[in-house]
Amino acid sequence: MATPATSRSVLTRRGVLAATASTLLLSGCGRDRERRNAVTRPTPGQELVVGATLELSGSGAALGVAQQRALTISAATLNDKGVQVGNLRRTVRLELRDNRSDPRLAAEQAAELGGREDVHALVGGTLAETSMSVIEVAQELRLPFVSLAFGDSITVPLAQRAFVYKVTPDAGDVARRLAQLVDAEGLRRVVLLAETGLHGDSGVRAMTGALRTAGVGLVRTVRLPASSAGITRAAERAVAARSDAVVVWATAPRSGAAARALRRAGHDGKLFFDAGAVAEETLEDANLRAVEGAYAVHPSSLGGSTIANSSAAGRAYRDLVSRYIREHGAYNGFAPYASDALLLITTAARLASSVDRGRLRAYLQNQVTDGMAGMYSFTPIRHSGMERHSLGVYRVDAGAWNRLS
Image (cartoon, rainbow, N blue to C red; front, side, top):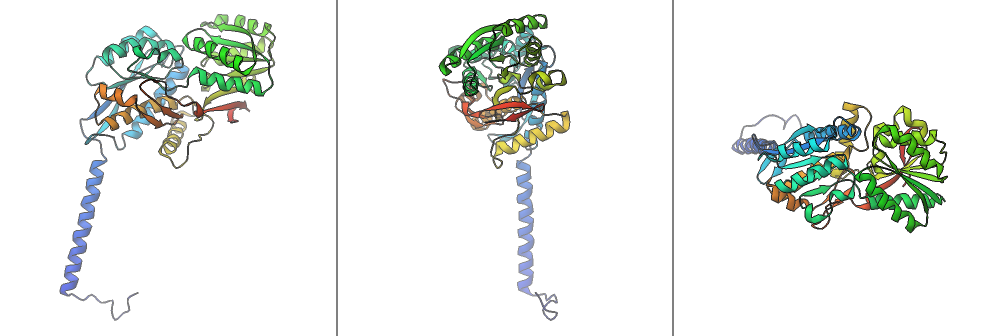
C-alpha cells in the first residue's frame, strides 16, 4: 500500500509513457471486446430456414403442440448468438405449418416449403402417417427431413429414405426394455393392445419378438381402433384374455383413453406403455386413477435428465425445461425431440460450413450428437439414430413419472 509520502502524483516521462501504454492497451482490449461481440451477433440478412409441418390441431395435437413450443424456444436460444456457418453467423428462422393431423395436408405443406429455395431443411410429423406422407416429397426435392414420429418404417428401406432421419427411439429397443421389465416383475401372461396404424404395426412386430426372447407368453394381440367409439370394445377383448399385464402401444391421447377403458373393463393388473404415451394428456385428471402405478419406457429426458450437468446438452436441457415451464406451465417430456431435431440440423450446417441441402444431408448421416432426449449416432446405413442406452424405465407415482432405472 502506498504511503502518504509516495501517493502524490509525479509527472515524469516514464509515467507518461506508462499511462499512454495503459490507455492503448485498454482501448485495444475494448476494440477486441467489440470485435468479439460483433462476431457473436447473427449476420444481417443471413438465415438458416427450417420448415416444420406439425399437428397443432386434430388427433395428433397432444404431441404436435409440444413440438411447436420446443422448436420456438430452441430457435430463440440459438438466435441469441446465431449459428456459425462458415464465416457467417446465421439466424434460425422457422416456417411453421399446422397439418391438422392430415397426411395429405402434411405432404402439400412439405411440397410448398421444399419448393422454396430459401428453405434448407424440414422437421415434423409427430404421427407416423403424416411423416410417411412427407417422405416422398423430401426424397424428390432432396430436402433433409428429420421426423419426430414413432414408427420404424419411417427410415427403412434406406434406399428410399436417403434424405430422411428420425429422432424417436426404435420400436425394437423400447420393446426389449419393456419385455425385460415384464419378466423382472414375474409376469408370465401378457396382452398387447396396439393402436391401428404404422406405429402400432412396429409395436406388434417388436413386442412379439421381444416377449418370445424373454420367455413371456403373449396370449393375445388386440388392435386399438383410430376412433374413440371402438376403444371400449378393444379393452374388453384385451381383458377377456385374463392376462397378468397389458402393454399399451399407442400415442397420447389414445394411450390414456385405453388405460381408462381397461380399468373399466376390469383389468386390475399391471399396465405398461411405450414411449408414445408420454405426454401431458396421459397424466391429466381423468386418467390419473387408471394410470397410477403404470410403467413406461422413454428416453432419459423424462422425469429428470441424466445428462451431465456440466455438458452443453445438460445446460441446454435445463434451459429448455425452465423456459417451457415459465411460458407454458407443466413441462412435457415429449418436447425435447423437436429441440434435438433442430440441434442436428444446425450442427450439420456448422460442420458443413454450408446450408446446401446436399451437404446438410451428408453431415446429418455422419453425426454423433449428445442431444436433450438422448444420444444420437447416425451413419450412412442407419438413419434412426437414438442410442438404446438413452432409454430409461419410469413408473407413475402420485400422478408423476418417476425414473426407476
